Length: 406
Image (tube, rainbow, N blue to C red; front, side):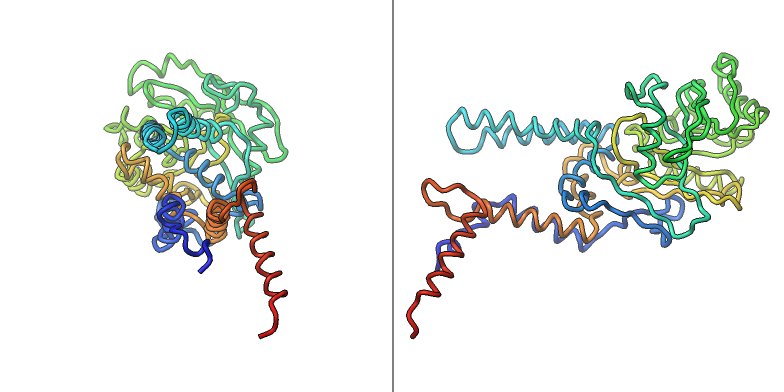
């Protein structure tokens, strides 16, 4: 039996084989690409289209997306756990002390680099495609550099391009306490809005907004709730941004309704907001259904991060509770379902369960290529890699051709 067959690959490359097994086993419990945040069912009339580069580089694309959709608490636990684990592994492996120290440094550094890349580095992203052209794909809450926590230099044109790449037709620009008054129609239309910061609550105002005296609405809860009447007098609508600030006024939800709130955000992609628990979301859904209130999702994009976790399908022929469908990625909705300290293993598992078949095939291909690259025997002085396998096969073919007939 040839030496390449006799090698104990499983013993020598356990991590590669473990990843192969996980990619295959996770297909037995797949997650849908998107779910309706209200019903929990996968939508039948939309699809996520992946650029060729996204699929070819699926292991990198999927890892960066999974890092993007970590809640704040889970992100810290994820980074801390993996950095400690890789440091320990690097020091525990055999080899000269210098090599072990280098491994112990490079492992955690790679985790940090991936985290920074998820936030800053441009990359291919998935695009929502709808079957019904009468529906509009809208983002109800996004920011430019005009917000105090916006990415420096993040312009309205940058924001429009960011949305267009992911299938949006329009987006409201809701900078913190700064009214958007620019005209941008390409590549998508940007709509006027603002995000008012008022007494422990953020209120997203959409439409023809004008400046208000925030001090009048920033003293207590009744004062804050008065902003909705003020917005209505301007001809704007007011949405309570709950996922990030829900604890501040959770006992006041009924008072929001009495104050004529127009609706609630139920999915927001900011790291703090991803921790919004499912039971709290269910309570808001019940309230909105009972009072015919608008429900929306928001990227809350500030120029940090390349991918959104939510899209809205808005219907011009409906209003209130039925006017909008919130479509979200399951990995984002699941952030509050798991304890933060489990992020190091639950986030990769959620990512693998959410792979499409094309992404899964890309993962398997890359893992097999790496396995072949590392497993094929090397002769002294030869470079490693697939070339060794090619030369080995060529020699075997030549030997077959030269063998005398039996």
